[in-house]
Length: 491
Image (cartoon, rainbow, N blue to C red; front, side, top):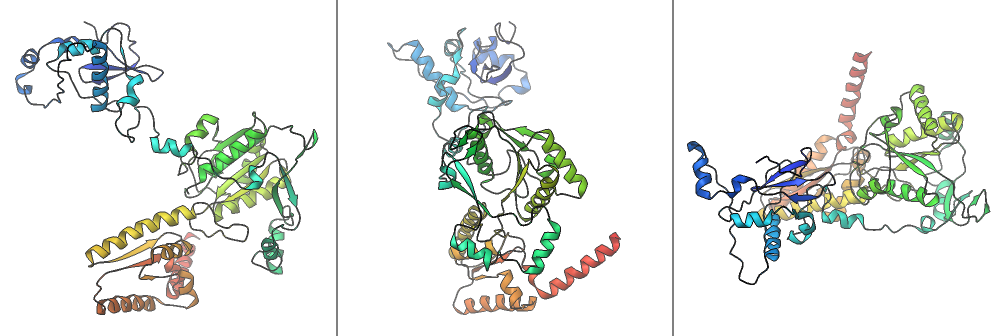
């Protein structure tokens, strides 16, 4: 007898499932084909047909079932058996499935009759827990529940229509920051910035506010225009990156259903090489509220001269983009500033926007309460540090030195220290301000260990920022000398 049986296309994906064949059709529906002829044999006949060296050599999972009581319909029995088989032997594509009905040939014949058993209709009923994904589903039930969550938007973005308000900041604290606070640059710095960015220097501060919008139809008109936006994920991944894309996608689609968002692949290099994907509703819904940057990938490319600026301008012009959004940290927003300056002169129809993203928390100002990613990172690391605290309280014999990421900024290690209360934490900026040398840091650590030893405590936890070495005076000198040697060799 030919196998697969008649009626099953040879090009369909076939998965062996016990002694039957699971046929996966092109639309990802699963059916059980008729039983192969060897399944009709008895156990003794099958054992006799095997080579001598293989008899009894490989354990086979066996499932035994009682005969159905009299009065129970055969269809109900088949359904029960099908559900049991599905629950007991869930596998994945290109792998074998266990669970043969040895010694029960009549059950195999009933289960895999010519009218194939529709497995996909009983999949959910057969599953007994919530963390088994479907064969062709990359999303777990927990992720699906997360995808359905809706963010709470600020009033300016939650409104049906928006307007741009230019001029002095509306918020008193922000206004003060511009006039006399950290955003007020010294005159010499302002002159340098104006020389570097003559086209974009001096733009008015602008806020998005709810209100009527002026379009071709007049003020307050509901007429919408098609918007074409490109977006880039740059630098290290941070929680919230996909929701930035989702917010942009939802906004342009609400303005006009024909609006398009282009996602450039692999960071800024995707712009320069014109590698992108068009973001559809179906694709976007898969990544809502999900971590990582895997939707578009990320990259650490940067603008290297006039040639890269020209390439980016040509790509934006060919795609007829009205805007280009770069999501990233300090380096990525520096790229955004260079692109904005170039576009203002050569392609003013395309606006360039930088979105502050950094887990390190080193992009802060009165306009940026916290860059997205920082809060989640602080909570995640604090949980891990808290686990170590529980561990050392249990053993009371060890010291843990935990180096927390954050590069040259100590915001993240400080936040973790405030949440976990370690025995000692070094803040890089404080080390720099106190001019503490390496010997001072070692002495402070040793003094803590000795003091706790006298108190009968031979354990503790100490936090260090990732960039602590950059704040130690002798290390600064060493790094400077190494850079000079490397520069001389490159020259």
